[in-house]
Image (cartoon, rainbow, N blue to C red; front, side, top):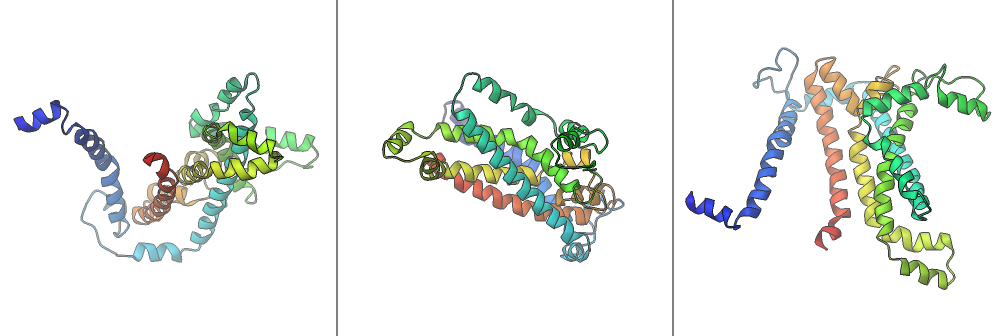
Length: 300
C-alpha cells in the first residue's frame, strides 16, 4: 500500500488515477443504469414488481409485443420525421448564420452571442415560449403568416394532427440552431485564408470556393455536428411535454416520449425499457460516427 501511495504521489500512475476515477463515476451513474435498463427489457415489469430485482423473464416478448402494437410504426415514423427535420433545419440555418457572421462586420461578436440565448435556456422554458408563439388564437406565428398573406385563417399548431409534430420541430430547430452555428463558426475559422485568396486569383467565384474549399475542409466538422445533432434530438423530451404532450392521438408522439409515457403513465416498465434500448442502439451508432469524424483531430 505504501508503494502504491508513493507511486501516485510521485507522479507515476497518476494518469491511471485520472482515468480510473471518472471511469468509475461514469460506470456507477451511467453504466449500471444502462445495464439495468437492458435487463428490464427482457423481463415483465409493472408497478407491483418494480421493487424486486427477480422478475418473470420473458425474453424477446417485450420486443415482439412492441412491434405488434398498431401505434408503433406511426410513432417511429414521427421520430424519423422529427429527427431529420430538426437536424436539417438546425444545420442549414446554423450554417447560413455561421457564414453570415464569418464576414466579421462591426458588432458581429455581440450579435452572435445573442443567438446563444436559445441554447442556454431550459427546454421547458423554450416550450412555454413556443406555446405562446404557436397559439391558435393569439399566436405570433399565425399573425405573421396572416400579414404576409400566406394563410387566411388561424392554424391550431398544437392541436391539429397535421401540424402538431411540425410545431415541435420548429421549436427544436430554434433551440439547436445556435449550437450548430457556433461549431460551424469554429470550423470556418480553422480554414486557412490563403486557400480562398489563391482560388480567387485563379478566377473561382464564391460558389466554387464554397463547394471546393469550404465543404471539403469542414467534412469532419459537419460529420461531428450531424452526429451530435442526432444524439441531442433523440434525447429531446421537454418540448413534447411542454407543447403537445404527444397528441393529439399520438400525432406528435415520438419514441423517447412514448418510452416515458409507457413507463410512468401506463406503468409498463418492460416495454418502456425496450424502447429505450432500441433508441440507445441508434445513439451508439451516432456516437460512432462522431468519434470517426473527430478521430484525426484526436490523433493530431
